[in-house]
Image (cartoon, rainbow, N blue to C red; front, side, top):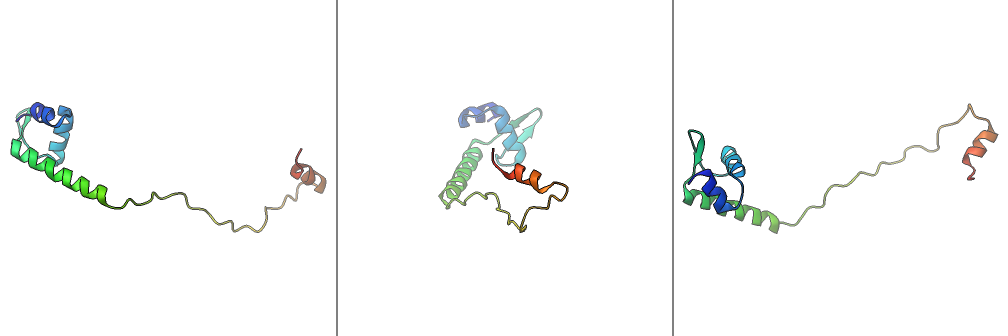
Length: 95
């Protein structure tokens, strides 16, 4: 089988087939400008990948890690020594 035939069989693009062949997830042999695949090996590889993915889906899903809540180690806000008490009061008073 050539890349186009495998792509038609799997319902994907030729580029996807050749990317998988280069990565080694789809068994094939490079001949000249193209790839050649043994149909029984392609089918066996798809079966293996399908079984692995099904087993992964059957595993309980881990919760995604969220944001870590940081502890507030400050007892009070930093001082505003350069501001008068009246200015601080005006800033802190809702309008």
